[in-house]
Image (cartoon, rainbow, N blue to C red):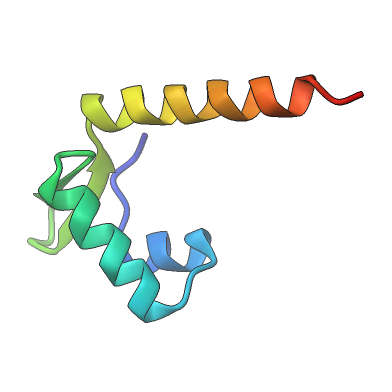
Length: 70
């Protein structure tokens, strides 16, 4: 995945600013997201290997709950 600026991630998350910042800082501290500077020296973020593992688990959980419809 291509590193993205924080504002773009927030808009795509469809969360308000306060809630987004709460999740974002928590995920950054826990190592699900990594920060790095782009060629202009501005901070960009991308999903870490640990974040990819979490995403796979969450997608699997969603698949299991949706596919068991009666």
